[in-house]
Length: 262
Image 1: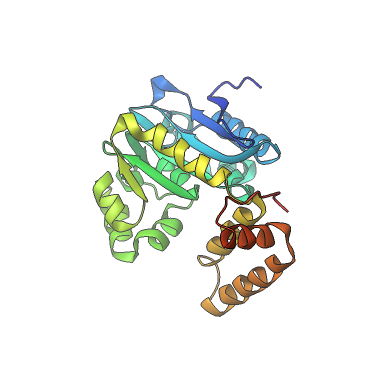
Image 2: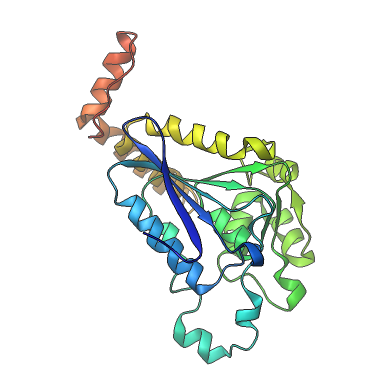
C-alpha cells in the first residue's frame, strides 16, 4: 500500500522477513500529525497480521526520528475539539496492540511526541547523533502520549523529572546509561544493526517471541507477584508446544532447531 506520510518495505533473506516503516515528512523533520499516525497504525497492523513478517523496524531520517508533534496543527485547537475528537487517544496507541517485536532505530531528534513514539517500541537502537527529550514545558504543555508515564518507568523518576521540567535533551550515550536505549552505533550502522537484530529474532520461535514480549511488558504494568504468576504460567504452557521440544532436543543434539512457530 502507498502511504502519504510513511514509507514501508519488506527486507530479509530467511523464511520470515522484516517489515520496515520509515516516518517520512522530511520538511517537517517527521513532525507527527494525525495523518501520519493513521498511516503508522495501518502499517503496523498490516505487518502484525502478515504471517510472513517476524519483526518490525520503525525508523525516521538521519536528521530526525520525529522532532515532535505538529505544533502548527495544534495551536488553535480548543479543549472541546481535542476532547471530543479523541486527539492523540484515537490513533497514537496502535503500537500497544502489536504482538510482534518492534525495534525502534533512532537517529537525530526524537523529541516530544517523537520520544513518546520511540518509547512505545519494544527496544531502541540509537545512532550516536540521536537526541531525546520531552520539551513540551517550553511551549506551555505537558506530554500527552505517555511521556510522563513511560519515561519514569524507563529511566527513573529523577531523570524523568529533570527532562520534563527543564525540557533539556540528552544524547545517545546518556540515553544508553539511563536504559532508554539498548545499543548505540554510528549513524551508518543504525539500519544494518536494527535489521541484524530483527533477523536474529526472526530465527527464533515466533510464538515464544510474542509470549516473551507479553511477559516483559507485564513487568511495567503489574506488581511483581502478578508478573511472576504470568511468567510461570507461560513457562509451564510452553511444555505443550512443538518449539519447546524441538529447541531442547536440538540443543542436546548440537544442531540448529527447526522451529514451526507453534
